[in-house]
Amino acid sequence: MDYDLATWLNLALRWLHLIAGVAWIGASFYFVWLDNNLTAPDPPREGVKGELWAVHGGGFYHSQKYLVAPPHLPSHLHWFKWEAYTTWLSGFLLLCVLYYWGAPVYLIDRAKMAFTHGQAVLVGLAFIFGGLAVYEGLCRSPLGQRPRAFGVVWFLTLTAAAYALTRIFSDRGAFIHVGAIIGTAMVANVFLVIIPNQRKIVAAMLARRPVDPRLGAMGKQRSVHNNYMTLPVLFIMISNHYPIVTGHPLAWLLLALISAAGISIRHFFNLKHFGIIRHDFLFYGAMLFFGVTVIATVVKPKAAAISAGPVAFTTVQTIVRTHCVMCHSPTPTHPGFAAPPNGVAFDTPAHIAQYAPRIQERSVASHSMPLGNETNMTDQERATLGAWIKAGAKLP
Image 1 (cartoon, one colour):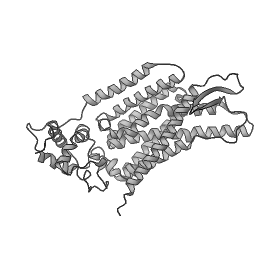
Image 2 (tube, one colour; image 1 turned 90 degrees about the horizontal axis):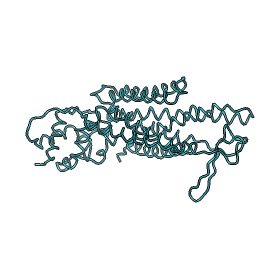
Image 3 (tube, helix red, strand yellow; image 1 turned 45 degrees about the horizontal axis):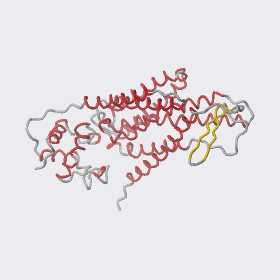
């Protein structure tokens, strides 16, 4: 039996990552909403900052937030941490299985940078943990006390990282590393600040010492950071399905604009929780995304000129056999695949014509295929495919 370990690991880790991510993001969004909807307790109660009555699933719930901590701790106290830890661990393992184990296929683009397998992995890790070091340095600097200025500087830092990564890694590999930088900063907020500070608060209470209110404030600061970074990470998780973005010559700029749109939309909802309706932030988000569509449509990869006249299908078939069939075949010869990716096979003329729109999207318009351009498909060949498709993708 030919057991494809990498593929099954990929599936299992991706599923686990999705489940854990839903749990973490759901809890994060809920607690930000809860915190923003608290009202002064009625009647006032000592130490209680705010409360919220809610109804859900046929039951009534009464939530209270203390200024520092309650006078007495309950015997059962839930710590929201494993949602975050499981999301990061499953995501990092998925990165290792797909992009580091399969670096020659998914990460290295020799037309950009001729890394060895080991070099590519080390550079990827350097960006992830180097990004975390920069984030922590910014948070602990005086800039960390100025939320808007901090947000601008961190956003520009991530944009610079995206620019650099798109110059050295494959399209998908570059985007996923930007997401890994953000996700690592988010889980570090939980692991390095939020949970340790909560433990210090609990320890002080048990020892009957005064609780430092700055501990809770620091945790709240990092929680808010995570709230605004969530939507950019979610987009990156699905971005590999949209080569019109990842394979664009200005992919780093498109990612920055889409992330800014997500941040603007998130800010609208955060304000709405306080009862402040600012539709202009929804408008800003929509305009940013519209700007992405305009840039992606107007700015396109340069295509080589081809001679006038119809393109013979035999020419198209030769290009496809040279650059595509090693992966997109019922029995791929490429060592990275045991089955054709997404079930797309170019084994017959009919199949080539059937998937012509996908060839146009991924090989002509975005240059995202072949992966890492490891077969060195030329601009002339891409233009030839594009001309055949534009003429109607006709078969003999």
